[in-house]
Length: 235
Image 1 (tube, rainbow, N blue to C red):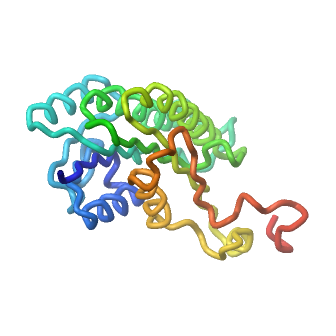
Image 2: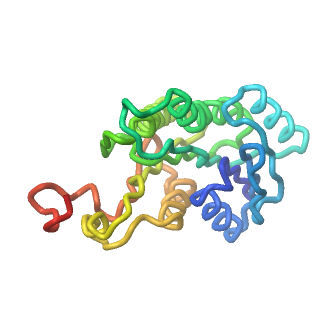
């Protein structure tokens, strides 16, 4: 049976790369995006609304049920960043936007899509930057949301296991421009959307059938750097 994959946030760089990759493997791609986002060419169906609102998710679920579409894969890649801002400069509206789009959206996606997923073998992936492995004073909202997403995925992994639904997380470093920053990455280049999509494809696949509650870090080895081994001038 042809797999059905839902990509939440197909208009994002990571979501777009993932949608294209899923289509190339023969999956039917369903895109669920924020209102106004362009439909990804790989999607056979696009649903749009406010991913932070339960009423919209109930509508998405009803539409999929009406069409007889039972997803085997769900990837939430619709998170947002408020941009670099120190705590005293971060407006509450910007904080709320990040938490709603990433953490609340992921919770609602899983709450309303879990009952529709074909089991056993169903897989869920929550994608996020930072996710607790790194700390930046100028990314307060993203750090909090990413840490919450990681904890959410672990709880959902326990809840989903008896149902045959695996839940994992892929995380990557927030972009930091400049050659000095690139020098801190052992593999010598910044994380690309395709790099993240590769990791997501693995965790959604049967090759990861015994992985749930895991967080896969895609950073080119950046997290291995410390004061003792970082290149000169990289701090």
